[in-house]
Image (cartoon, rainbow, N blue to C red; front, side, top):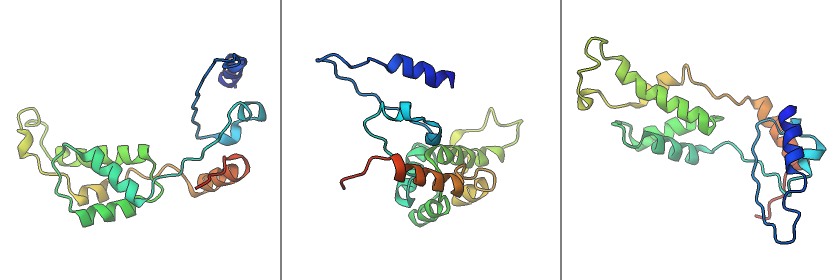
Length: 159
């Protein structure tokens, strides 16, 4: 509440000059907590949905870039489908966990001397095991609440 009050105080009068040009972008995962005073200071409210399967696949590939993997394209498609409701942050945590699984197979006594190329590649099975502990953090109820908020306050897209 104090942060919101401070934001509103600092935001008042900004960009009010004739030659002032200002672009402010803000993000929240609690849009329902924004009151009318906060909402009216923004010309547009854009709801950014969770990534779809194709986007999740691209995110995972980007996160794994530079790592040794043995994941086929078909397996990557299956991982992308299995990560429904995962956010970008959830996918980051998932990839980190999957990447750690081959390392956890190395004994503690040899971890400092093992060559990087002798660590087995990250596999699709690592992702399936990682999904047992790293789950989507956005609930269906939260998604429904976001959709309701967007229907009421979101900017209508022309596309």
